Image (cartoon, rainbow, N blue to C red; front, side):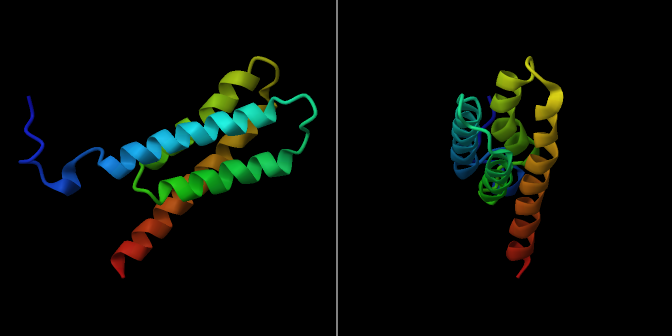
Length: 111
């Protein structure tokens, strides 16, 4: 068993805010997927904006960007990929948001 008290905080894979951020990312992804599968919902711009800004805000919470993309866009991919492959276009927007948030977090941390 690894004693977490002896490990430096910067070398830990997850901190408590990152775990809460991961849970928040999964909840955001589930809400976005739920809204996008509604019968009368046909607004791609709002869905893409929600993916981008959701990933951007959550990656500011020190969640690794690859996990943010997985948790934010994953539920929508699982629900809509069997019907059409057009949903794959959501991945670059979630990637841009999550890595943009990570970039902003690092720039703020340096100053």
